[in-house]
Image (cartoon, rainbow, N blue to C red; front, side):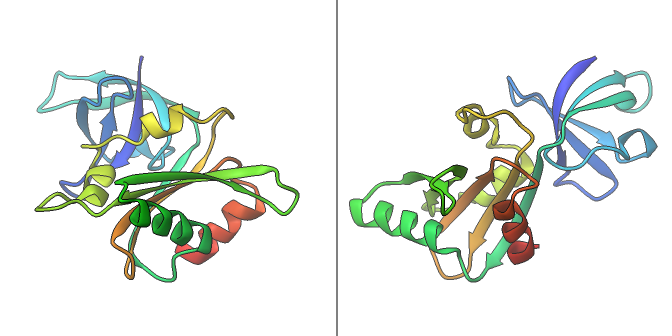
Length: 181
C-alpha cells in the first residue's frame, strides 16, 4: 500500500484527492465506502485498483488523523495571526511565522501568514486543491501528528493564514474549531 494525504477533490463532491506527500502527485478516487473513514488532512495507506475506468481504493488504513479545514472570508482574524501579518507587511516580507503559546508559555501551535499573491494566483485555492501541499509546513514541526490545520482566507486582511494546532484535543484547537467552523 502507498501513503497519501487525503483532500477534498476540487473537481466535485463525488470524489477525493489522494496526494502523494513526497511528490505531490495527485490521484483522484471515488468518494465511496472505502473512503468513508478518511477525512481531509488524514494521512492514509491505500491500495489502489487501476483496472476500471480510473483508480479505486480497495483497502485503506488511516495512519495520521490530522484534519485540514479550509475557510474563506473569515472574520475576525485571531489576534496573533493579525499581528504576525502586520509584522510581515511592515517589513515588506511575503511570509511570516510565529509559534503560538498558552498562558504558561508552552507551545500550542504555529501560525504562518502569506501575502496575497499578485495576479491570478489563488494561494488559498492552491492549498485546498493540493497544488501547493501543506506537508512541507507540517514537516517543520518538532511535535508528532495528529494536528488540526486551519487554512484561512481573512475577509479584512490581504493574506492567507495557515494555523497548526499541535494537539487536536487542546483548548487552542477547540477555540479554533468554535471560531472557524
